[in-house]
Length: 321
Image (cartoon, rainbow, N blue to C red):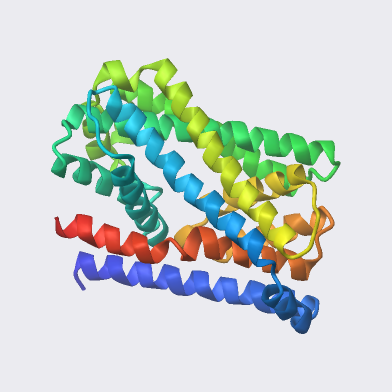
């Protein structure tokens, strides 16, 4: 079996495992409560709130596009915002369809920018700023979420341990990126890891004046936090669509812990893992299992399944080009 076929088989296995895990979560939750009540909740979701959720998700795509336009604008590259929105959707599809810690989507973006005539230094600087601001915002949002859980008295070792392990690792990523992009060397054993050497070589091509601009990084960090808030707000709106008036702060904490589980998972987009943790953490703040599952599935429809079709079309277009 060739290496290409092995990778394709591994991707299919990961998708099948994720779908099976998701089916298990749905079966358990509906059996735990009432299947009829679950169906009725989905069928009677308020359309107006679903429309609000769609607007919030459109906001995440536009905000993500603003990051790329902001960074590349520092390199005197001016392009319509809509072109970056399409690129962001293609990247989102690649990251969700192929578990590669964001590498597949990043490679697609770099090649797409090369095709658009963007100098490699500017495109790599954009990647550095995007990743640094993302991980910095992620660690900040995760810390806020743990603070909310602690304030409500629901913080357990099962929640705190993964977060305490992952947070320092996530915080180390932006520091390592800035270190490498400054031309500094990492330990030899680290360079021998798969994908690390070509990634390091590419990062050294980043334009230093852009990649190390603290003011620019802070601006993009603000955009990243806005994306997190819009996503968490979408989950909160899903609960309102089902007729549940829930405090937004605990919902934000539930979303961040579920996102952490998704990040640590090996299945595409954390399929099944995100849903299970979301239902469990929403249950801790008083949301019934049936309603928590319905809200989570609606949320995943808007954030995971709905962008897949346009993302696939745009990714195929970029790949062919």
